[in-house]
Amino acid sequence: MTTYRLLTFVADPFSDFRIPLGALVRTAGGVRVVLAPTVVELKGTLRAAWDLARRLVVQIDTFDELPPFIGPQIVAGPVLRVPGEVADPVDWLARNLVHVAA
Image (cartoon, rainbow, N blue to C red):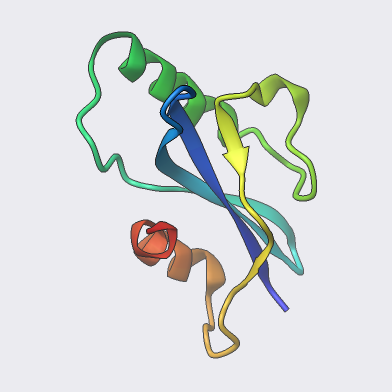
């Protein structure tokens, strides 16, 4: 069974505005990170924070807990299952991540 956790970027903690950032995928071969495409236009310091978040998440190698270097603006959702009929979970998430996160 392949599982995943959606990663979201908390752009504004006061309004809880979140942007899909990617997903952690746990497969038989280990943990993989799939990045989501940028779905909103970001500017200024928010864009800089987004770019940093994307650079940090590709370094994650654990599934159950996020490493401390990630910080509070990146949040992992609950553990979800990849549908059983999906042959390549990483590719499936890469193609469908924005839709899965909605």
